[in-house]
Amino acid sequence: MFRRILGQEQDEAPVRNPADDHWYTSVDGAIAFAETSGVVVSARAALQVPVVLDCLKLLSETVPSLPLKVFRKLPNGGREESDQHPLADLLARRPNGFQTSWEFIGQMQWWLVWHRNAYAEIVPGPRGAVDQLIPHHPSRVAPRRNGKDVWYDVADQYTGKSRRLHSSEMWHLRALPFTDDGLAGVPVPQTSGNIIGAAIAVHAYGARYFKNGGESGGVLEAPPGTFKAAEDRNNYMKAWRRARTGGNQHRDAMLEHGIKLNRQQIDNQKSQFLETRRDLALEITRIWRVPPHKAGIMDNGTRSNVEQQSIDFVTDTMLPWLELWESKINADLILSSNFFAEFNVSGLLRGDLKSRYEAFFQGRQGGWLSINDIRKMENMNPIANGDDYLQPLNMAPAGSKPPAARADMQAPAPADLPAPTH
Image (tube, rainbow, N blue to C red; front, side, top):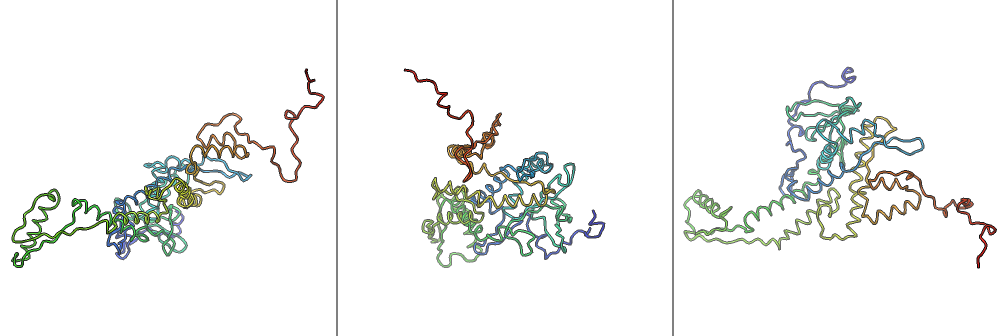
């Protein structure tokens, strides 16, 4: 409101310049032409490749599945969970009037993974300055810099009308690599379009091949003068294809006028069709640093390396995404420096039952875990007197005197010992 009063905001809608790609691209957004494969790479086409769908679903479903809590900083350097913070209710229940927190975070993460940009309009209301977060598709939002300020031109999904929002009114998540001006992330098709385009082409070839019953085409050899005009030849070819494709591909056919059929056999084994599909699938998992076994590729998987890859999935794949979310929440949505938001990733690192219990035993004996700490990590209710921590008697700072023995642990004096009996 103050910006409008001071004349720092332009009320007129931005002009749709034909030279501006933002206003004249497909609603899909993030589209690129893969020159090497000759394929148009769009989200709709890429999702036909199973490994692309697996990677996007994995990264988009993992983030909203992790607990996201708001904490208050304590004077002693500790922290406590703040369930009463308005943002805690927004992030845990209803970010807006039509989505749950799981749906909102999952949709934003999906856009972030593919478009490398995710936008949500900040709407104030009863819960404070951030009462709702309304998502906007990345293809309908264009960030602009005007001096020191950043503005976002948002095209309405239904009317097509545009309005301009200040950066304080738009929550923008962007992932590397950035555009030259640093205002947005570069969509995946523009950085990895050739790899994804090649995978689309290979899968399309396989679909066409098996659609034709696993048989390749051939060449019809006709004696000279068989067809008097090009139209006659074209009509004959159309009739031949109708008789030999679709449901008629295995029926008998008759060749007239001395025409011969020369089969062209394609050896998929020599062309390494399966190997090409597997290698492209591995290349695609590298785009998002997804461990192969998470995308269903178990060719070289063993128990030991799969377990290590699961740990790498948390530290190398998910941690950068979670850090991005946390930093943007803390910088743009939480207005007080005494509070912060954080994801809990312990569920991804739980391991099997035996490994967890061994770790709990060491933590309990070492003195840094209480009974209730362990029960909380196992989703169990606390018990009375379960917050006490053990302190091993044989551990003390170097050079210090050993602690005095408790009265009930002292050995009885010789005079107090009972007389021996014979």
